[in-house]
Image (cartoon, rainbow, N blue to C red; front, top):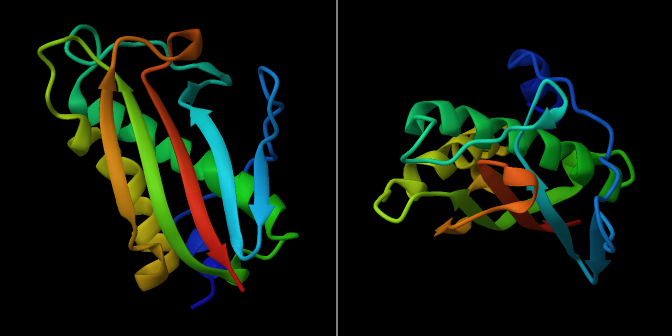
Length: 152
């Protein structure tokens, strides 16, 4: 099944590439690798402002991470020239979770993105990953994720 068939089965429509909020580009390709800049969680088109351990649950933030993965796939779609089937492998995710000092479930939040990428890309979506708790993320967002992929 193609990536686009999987997206349709999951009722996912890819968004256009977001305009960078600072001095960077959405993605850079070198060789067969494409590096996607960090994407923050958004809700209703605005930054999804929250801090884990204070005002959002792990399950809610897992949904935020899933939403970030959809945005990342929109950017990856542009980076592949409009053909996500060129993705050979999702190589790595790095996830930053806006957390209180005593919150320790960043890895569970990040599963929202990892699980969706596995559903969409199958084995090619299995990836290495880091999940960090941080004191703050730009614009107060609850989650920020960056992605590295290998293209054919």
